[in-house]
Length: 350
View 1 (cartoon, one colour):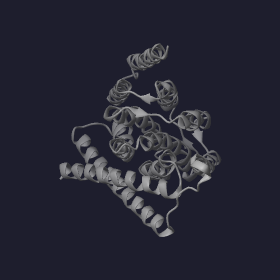
View 2 (cartoon, helix red, strand yellow):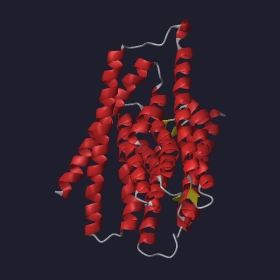
View 3 (cartoon, rainbow, N blue to C red):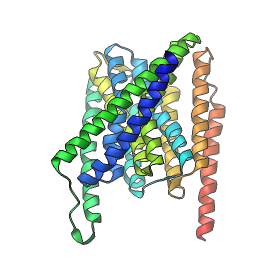
View 4 (cartoon, one colour):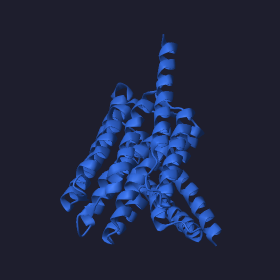
């Protein structure tokens, strides 16, 4: 039954991811919004629903480590695993507007995590401010996207529109795909937890790995399917938008709902959160290289995430330290590959 549960979860994720990309693209065309903006808003908000559910329930039940760890772990998985797998499927072309606008926003938002957690807890006021910032950011992204799409029309032609009935049907289709994604992730996580417990893996390790990965499976399914279908703006926009949503809405909502200030574990402040920030900063040179994410960079991203997961397992098994030096070595290796590719591109231009 556990195997059937896992297979059903995978099937729901694949079908839901395909439908989400298909209907989101049609909605973007109908509303005159670029697919990148749809990936940053509609797709990323929808596929982050599992993180939001886990964060709110964990905060309500007083499980602060799960609420904070889920956000940090999901953001690391989004960049290192999802972009890594998507780049293996096909090199991901990075939009200039994303590098110029949304990438700095993502880095700025991630930098807020150690700021609000500096005193060891996230208050209701801080959580509320993060949620308000998210609402304002979504409104601004949609407005900017529609303005850019309208300006791009030749001879001032209006952006094509569709009837309200069609838009409603597309929104219902997106809602259905999100239900499939959330259901699939729940089935898969439940099956994985059962297997992990049968193997004697600690609940701490399950929370740091299975929960974070499981709640990010909708993003993985949506981004990989989008890459296969050629909608690479949605694939990258989904990751960037999800990272922003996780901090502002999931972490902010958890802090807002928590009956007491949401504690931020000292271990997370000393290792996991700095690693998350370093990973987001790594996106800058990677995104700028040739204007795309290469397969080599995708492989190194996956190697970094594998190394991080191995350290979590070792830590959960009782290791006294994270043993991070070789993970740092992988990070340096990734930067070295990026620098080599930038140098190669300059030679070609010369």
